[in-house]
Image (cartoon, rainbow, N blue to C red; front, side):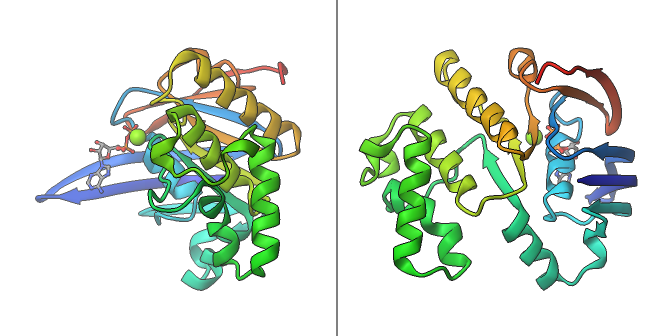
Length: 227
Ligand code: ADP
Ligand code: MG
């Protein structure tokens, strides 16, 4: 799936250079569930953004299925992102004035699918995450856990091969946290690759591989066959 070779990302701020990612070498296999842990500021979000085709590294090569992401044109990279990659965020990033169903339709709208197909697929995905009875609710009318499940349904809408999740359980209580992690595990069993940033050791235990970032340097900590 992914191959990173000597990937470094530095930010310049007020004349100072911060190296957020330092010569990262990393292979992520198809259908892996990888947890990325590490203290605040260690480069986790930077790594996820680089994997997502959203942030060009300062140097190094990021390949997705053998294609060097940042050697593509912006249009080609955007197309790959829309086709292969799903994102989940700590803050859900739902559009407040749209219903659950409309939120899930967004990626399909952007992919210019016909309206009836958008709605049909969105309903199917909301059903999958147990929200068939909430399709016309707006985010403000849903609990935090339900909002994150709408976000999961939206991520699935385009049937991505890889799901990149940045602290997806950070705003949830322990019960809804477990539910979201079980869904991510299910999505892995569908044949998808999951890369999840988390602060939480209990959440990381759902992954079959754990990587720690310390000041931008990758340290592998555990690989298991638990999945
Ligand atoms: P994490 O997600 O592990 O908290 P980040 O990847 O967000 O870490 O940040 C890693 C380092 O890069 C931090 O020192 C942070 O301050 C710095 N950083 C992140 N984004 C920017 C930016 N846009 N401009 C300058 N520095 C940044
Ligand atoms: Mg972060």
